[in-house]
Length: 194
Image (cartoon, rainbow, N blue to C red; front, side):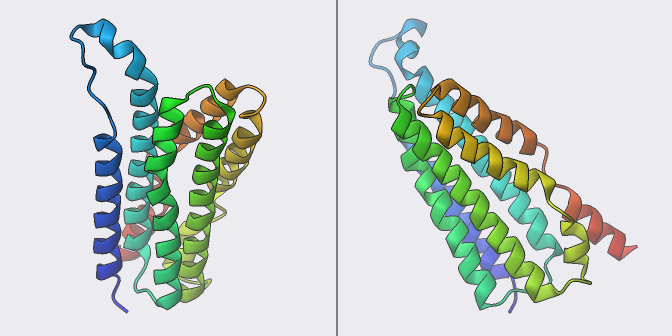
């Protein structure tokens, strides 16, 4: 199957996810910068979540650039990823409203971890479809950052009940680690074209 519909649908869902998150931001009733104080945690959680979604969108684009085609398993794996990303606005809103509470901080980490696992499932489905000798497989490599991210999210979930700020720091650290888009797929595709 052609991958165009999967890419277009994913782009649309991701755009809606970002739209839902921004619509949850409430404008302060008072004027002046002091009125922003109470909404700083919500703005912070929105910012981290926006970066998180942007990272997935960038890397999704690069990964699918290396994919030649998709099948039913890839379509379902992609839907699984989109499901977890679509839960992010809820987790973002909850942690924004209760930035020092354990449960919202842990849930945010669970959603991040589940999104990461869904990403790995999507990569695996594409790898199986394209084969071990494909450009896709060569570009994928060992995915060390993906494994480090999963461990950091898991640790963040645990730390939510000990010191929430450590959890938040871990979530931000993972976002910073992925801020520069993963260029493995882009390099592999360009190398194949030469």
